[in-house]
Image 1 (cartoon, helix red, strand yellow):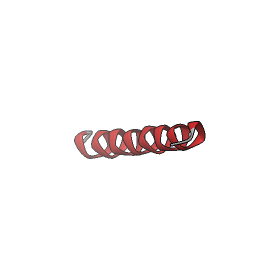
Image 2 (cartoon, rainbow, N blue to C red):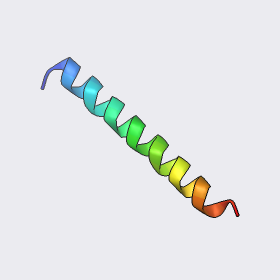
Image 3 (tube, rainbow, N blue to C red):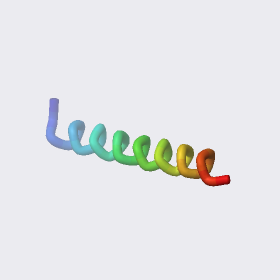
Length: 30
């Protein structure tokens, strides 16, 4: 695996985690 591949994967996981956090925050805040 190249270094760029791991960087891309890390970026995707960060984006996924941020979207998940925003989704949870949006649902919990009434």
